[in-house]
Length: 147
Image (tube, rainbow, N blue to C red):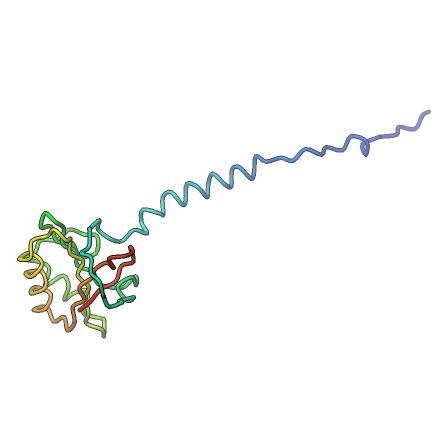
């Protein structure tokens, strides 16, 4: 009777299996592709440029109430298009549980002044204490504003 000797140590597989890594990377890529558009919480607007604006870092916070006016006169509350006649009541609802009664207005540089003025009047009648008008610094693309 003979003894069976196995030489498995000589058959070491030194190839790296990259399939699981590629699977993980593709899943991460898909997740980032889905989430990235959701992070954009602003309506596309060309802000007016100014020389000496006031910095308003609170406008970039997640819970900031932002009213946007596009150049064609559409009014947005956050990313939702709203009817200008309903803007005051919607802002009042959003500010009901907040202690800081401030909103930020992002108006396109080519928007009609009357539409912007009406939007500000609507939010002021809703009980807003302060309105920040967001602008853009002339030299750079940093979003800042002045009151």
